[in-house]
Length: 140
View 1 (cartoon, rainbow, N blue to C red):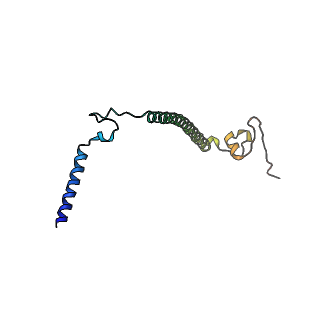
View 2: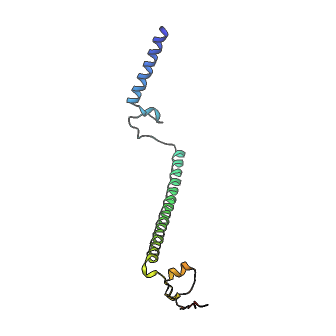
View 3: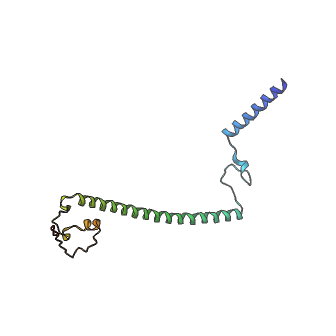
């Protein structure tokens, strides 16, 4: 029974101390040098300041390099998006041209009357400035 009361009192004291420290932290004990009322009087040794300065300089260089890379990536992304949009526009124009009634090829049409996009699809590979007229004799 005596041990239980001692244990409860010890837990009470520990909890009380933890709550008091949590509510009113006294950070003076964590700083080197004389205890002062303000935490702004922290002094670092010369080697520590030099190390921090070097680390800051390296960080700033890396950050500037990263910013340059980000800018070039953004520019490339914009360029790719523009090219993709151009491809979509060209494909839509080609579909419209293909569906257009003036793009239909009749049996009496000559090869010179076929639009360039249809010539490419047919695989003829003929230049547009040469005119060929074919006549087929059905009696043969």
